[in-house]
Amino acid sequence: MKYYSTNGKAAVADFREATINGQPSDKGLYFPDSIPAVSPQWLNDIRSKSQEEIAFDVIRPYIGGTIPDAELFSIVSETVSFKFPLAKVDDHVFALELFHGPTLAFKDVGARFMSRCLGHFAKGIERKITVLVATSGDTGGAVADGFFNVEGVEVVILYPSGKVSAVQEKQLTTYGRNIRAIEINGTFDDCQKLVKTAFADAELNKNLFLTSANSINVARWLPQQFYYFFAYQQWTADSTLPVISVPSGNFGNLCAGLLAFRSGLPVRHFIAACNANNVVPRYLDTGKYAPAKAVATLSNAMDVGDPSNFIRMLEIFDHKFGDVKTHVSGISISDEETKAAIRSVYSRSGYLLDPHGAVAYEALDRYMKSNHETNGILLETAHPVKFFDAVEPLIDQSVSLPERVTRIMNLPKHAVKLDPSDDLLKEFLLNSVPVQL
Ligand SMILES: *Cc1c(COP(=O)(O)O)cnc(C)c1O
Image (cartoon, rainbow, N blue to C red):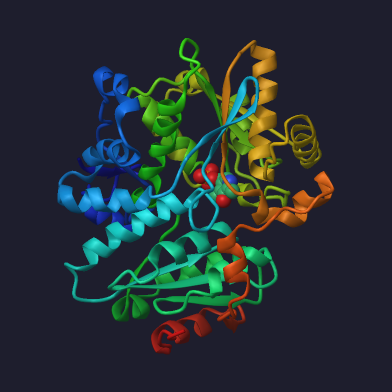
């Protein structure tokens, strides 16, 4: 298996090079040169397989021999070492819960898989690898947890001061060792700009082996296919396949589902569920892609105005707009509708959605009604407790903190505070050493 760049200029790469580089030099995205097919027999037998076996079989062709099978099996086993239950929300709607990992968000799977792959590849490199990442909240925690104690890899996380939730901040700043957090006096956009400038800085790149851990990295993107196979494994309303609704921001998750579908996984239809940031739903309506400035919403992990994985959605369907439209519908949900969905689902069935899952629920409900569909699955991408300040007033009740959250809430925060200056960040990267907590 080789990966080409969607911009067509950079050299093809194997999985190892694509993981280490993150992005091809021509600023396209890596894309597999063929999509492996799963056999009908394998799908038929899926209920007798373990999560680890499913994950291993799905990802193995994409690795193209760059990681030995035994090592790969232990990497996927650690990646999916928690449950992905399909929970009943009401008679016809189920939630695939992707929040049972260490940081309570679905990004744990991609971050755990990528960190272990990079750790494996770092053994063949003499220099330490420095992962530099900007976060608006969920990515940083998943990356910190995934990379904690991975040998040969240092992690530096930039986050905007005062703009991440209390739980998220603790998830970024309490690890220590090879994980360092920088609190930037600015916005998420400032953090992202600083990271971009650092990647382009010749002196920094001469002194450090820099790479990124954002969602365009194939090692974070590809393992997200597992969710869809796990959903299929648990699906028992056998005669009708489910419509799957995916709360989307940068569209890595949805594109992973579409890739699984192109590999032969049976899915009736996909919904790109968006908040007010509706660039993709508008594209699906009009055929025109018009990036926009992101607006702030309740489901803030989806506040993206120019989704970085959009190009992969086209690539999956060979740039045939008709085919994209046949398999994907885009639906945009307002904050008011999101709140109403959290409230009404909770009062009807006792199931508590987080704001991202609520966007997916509402979009699914709307689609099922207007298309007379009978069964649906929404991907619940975060535990509601991560957004308790938004959720609690809607249900008039407090959400209890899981044990792993109360534990970190009591740990001291360790972060270096910096103004958004390229020079200050450079000085930090060149001179500071990791702290031992
Ligand atoms: C990152 C995130 C999303 C968006 O996922 P994409 O793959 O970027 O589309 C949705 N929900 C939550 C909770 C997230 O953290």
